[in-house]
Length: 349
Image (tube, rainbow, N blue to C red; front, side, top):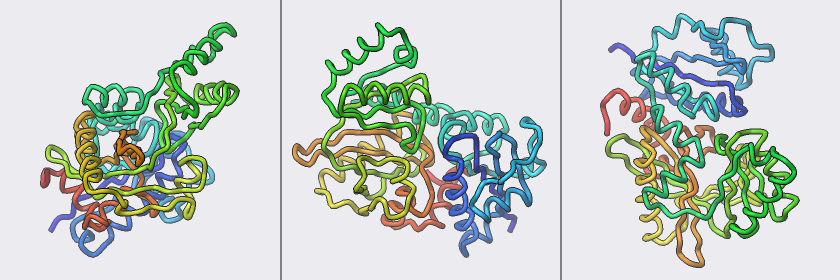
C-alpha cells in the first residue's frame, strides 16, 4: 500500500510561531500512531520567522526539540525545498497572520495540491473579527454590542481622538474589550474599565492592526464548540473554559494549569443544542471547511447565547480545546487527524 505523503507545514511569520511548533508536534505524533503509520508518511516543512522554508533534517530538528532555530539559516524566501514537490496533501498548522488568514491558503491553492482546512475566503473571513461580526449579523447570529475603529482615527489629531472615545463611551457601557481585528490567540487584547485605559488600549491595538474592534464586556460563561466537515459539518460536545485571570489572555491560554476546561460543559440540553446549531451556522456563514472552533458567551442569568468568534485553524497543543472536544465526542486524536486528511482527499463529508 502506497503511503500518502502529508506535508506538515509549521512555524511561520507570526507571533504564534512557537505555538505552531507545539501543535505540529502533536499532529506528527498522531501520524505515527498505529492506525496511521501504515497510511501516511510525514514530511515536515518548517517556515522560519523570516519566511524561509526548511525541510529535511532542519525541520525534523525543530519538530523534535519543540523550539525555533536559535539562528535562522539563510536562503531564498521564494525558493522552496525540493521535498515540497513530494507532498500529496498539505496539513498547514500555522497560527495567526500569514498562517490562518488566507495568505498561505492562497499559496497552497496555486500549488494545486489539496490542503486541510478552510480556503482563502473562509480563512480570511474567520481571521478578521470585524468581517466575521458583519457576516454573523447577516446570518442572524446574536452578538454583544461592538464599535468599529480604524488606526487612522486613533493616531489622528488631538481633536479627533477624544471625540472617538466620546462616541465609544456613548455607545457602549464599561468594561470593554479592545481587540486588533486580525490577530489570534488573544494577542493585543485589553480589558478596559476607564477612559484612560481605553485610550491606552486603543493605542496598543493600533500598533498591531489598522482595524480594531471595541466590544462590550458582559458577565457570561465562555463556551466553545468544535466543527468538523465540509458540506455536511458536524458539531462536537460543548466545552467551557474557566480561569482565575482577568480574561482569557495569551498566557492563560497556553500555560498549562492556568485554565480549566470542562468537557462536556455543564449546560442545559437546550442551550447545548442551541450552541451546536449556531456553531454549524457560523461555519457555513464564513464558508469554513475541514475544521473550526466556534466560541460563545452564555449569559446564565437570562439564558442568552452570543457568538464571539470563529477560529478556522485552532490550536492542536496538549491543552487545546479543539482536539479535546472531539475526544470527548468519541473521536480520539489520531482518528481526528485521519478524518481531517480523509475529508480533504474526498473521502468524507
